[in-house]
Structure formats: C-alpha cells, structure tokens
Length: 166
Length: 336
Image (cartoon, rainbow over all chains, first blue to last red; front, top):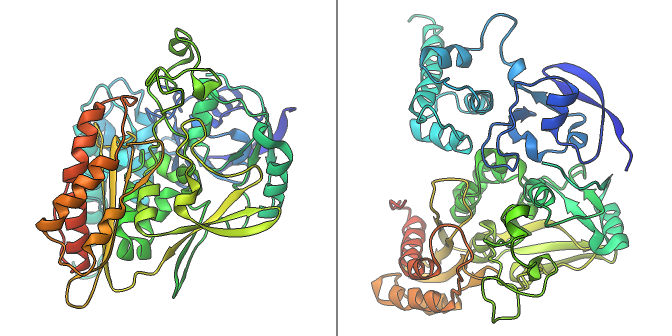
C-alpha cells in the first residue's frame, strides 16, 4: 500500500508527515521528525526504552503503527521540559543520580509522569509496578524509585503548604 | 527491525469490520492493541496482506453495567479493565488477571479482545528468525513437525493468556459478530486446543464484547500467576478461582481454570464437589489433585520446566480457592 500523508500531534505541535503503513511511531518520531530523544532498545516490546505518551498513556512506540496515531496527542521526552526549565521529574533525576548511561531515562520519565498524573502519591510498590516495563542496566532501579518518590513528596508538601492557615 | 508491508484498512463499524474480514480470509488479520501482532510481524512468523484496524469503531471500548452484569467491550484496554471500580470491587479475579499481564505499557495498549485471542507461544517459534532457521520449520509456521513433542504429529504451542482463565472462572460469555449477525457463546467455546490455531473463530468473526454475569450471593475471586520475573512474563502457570457463598457460609458455586499449561485454558469441573460445603482443607486437596491431572504442560516455555509448572498447580489451586472464599467472606488473605 502506498505511503500516506498524516498529521501527527507531538508535544502540542502538529507535524505533517508521510508514513508507510508498516512504519512504527518510533521510526516516524526519530527518522521523520528528528525527535531522537525516544530510544530504540529491543525493538520488540520488552525493554521500554521507546516509551512515549499517547493521550497521556505510556505506549511502546516500537509496537505502535504511526499511521494509527492520527488525532492522538503524543508526548515525547522533548516535550517534558518547558523551554530551559526542566520538568520536576527531570530535575529530581539529576539530583538523585537516577541517570547514568541515560538510555532508559526518556522512557521511564514519561511513564513516571503518567503515573504521577493519575496517582499523585504512589507507594514505593506502586512506583515499582509502574516502571516494571523499563529495563535499566545501570542504576539498580533504587535511584529511579527515589527520584519519583521525591517528586511525589515535593508535590504533596507544596499542596499542603497551599492550604490556608498552615 | 523491519516489518513486511501490508495494507491497513480502518473499519468504521462492527459490520464493516466483519465484511472486511470475511472478504479476505486468512490473509487478513484484525489489529486492536497490536502488541502481539507487531512482534510476530517483526519476527517473521506472520505476514498478513491486510490488517483491519478496529481501534476506531465507536462503542467497542466501553464497559457497561446492568443488573445482569457487566458488558466489557473487546476494545477496552487491560489498564482500564484493571482500574475499573466495579471490576476491582466485584470481580477481583478479573482485575488481578488484567494487572498481571505484561507491563504498564502493554496494558495501556493491549485490549481485552486481543488478550483473549492471544496466539499461543512456544520456545521454538518465539526465537529470532536466525535461531529459528537453524531447525526445519514446525507446524506453527507451516512446517511438518513439532520440535518440542516430535512424536505427537501436532503443534503443542502453549496458550498463555491471563484473562481467559479469569473469565472462565466467572462463567463469562462472548458476543461474536459476523455478517450474519451477533451470537452469544460461552467463553470456553473460543478455544480450539489446537496449537497452530488456538482461537476457534471463523473467517469474518469478531468478538465485540464479553459478558460477565453479576455474582449471585457473596462473591470472591483470586488470580495467581507463576512466572520468573515480577512483570512482563507470560504465565508459566496461571490459576483463576471464583466462588460464591450461601448465607450460611457454604459454597454456592466454585469455578477454577488454569492457563499456561496446555494449548488452551483448562476448566477444572471437579470444583462442583464443593457445592454445599464449607471451602476447607478436606476437599481442596482433592480438587487440587484433579487440577494437577488436567494440566498438560510440555517443555515449551522459557523459565521453569514442565514438571515444576504442573506440580505448582496443586498449591496454587488451594491458595486461589482459599483466597477467593476468604474474600467472599469479606476477609483478605496474603498472597504473592
């Protein structure tokens, strides 16, 4: 089947691209849009390095056809920071040493964002369950958990501080 | 990894999807979440000429509740199913089974219908193309032998869906649409127990929803999954139990089903013996033994061997039934 022109909405920007029906979202992001923050690891759905958010849900872009993403909101790691200001999760990842080689980092940061958006104060077990789909060969996961935990705690504290009379 | 080329057609309605599927026969395949399909395409074990995308069909991704029970659309994702309040509250076995699938990403993408129709797996077929080519093709990939059970003359690929045993334990049924209309069938009729083609749907047939009857009496359920890692893995054994109790605490109904130990999900009908009795040690051993006899795993999975998987059926059945009964009584039991 012939390639098809579609509009992909990535990080609140509309991109007009031509994709083949058998092209993955991963390949379209990296090769057509130049958004190489999304990584290709196993390319078969096991490692989580290619994770992006599709309508705020963590998706494996290596197992997603780009052509099926028209009309959906895609968030990649490039969309996490606001200009030069890092997202709190990115900031915490730096502070807690949760980034070593960096290959798994874009993927789990997005999963962590999706987790905290739906469950603002997760337990350590809930964090472990959420990031179980991300293989990290450097950190031993502890620092990643610490990072996500710290952001949740900071937000809790901030919301408590905002209560009048405290 | 490269994928073979194919045509992708977006179905606009169930009738449209059925017509497209009926028209093209086996060269056409449904794509829902795509999590398993795309792996098999990349791995070269499937090469459909056309994919029918059912992701945009309105109404296919809804969970509807009525006094008769739940109707779960085939396009509902596993993540949504696990988090649905009524499923979590009234059908714990189903919520636990959904949560036990793969990883969060796979659950966000994968659908209920897709998980039910999951293709069976085998340590030989699921290897890379290069590894696979070192041996002659097997039944599963249009060859003439089985490398796992060479004398059997048939394919022994393992059915490893997590939802199927839970839905069988809950006595669910499926709505199957075709150009001729929609038919409601018992969930067990979906499974052929043939390794090469484990799902007994005809050309042009599509699952539209799964119906889970409302529990009659105090109900509880539990799903236990044996695997090597705490996530990602297919079940090397999965046991689902669902019970309902009478007012006096005796068993009204008890159903147990197994997955990961045969070419389809296995119902253990011997649980009928629990009816009218207190679910306790005396009969649990007997049922666990019956389950052990019914499980027929062969050495075709990564991880634990067949004898360990079948031996674990006993303690798992006992723990799942005990856990289900405790939950029906409003108690919680620890399991892991």
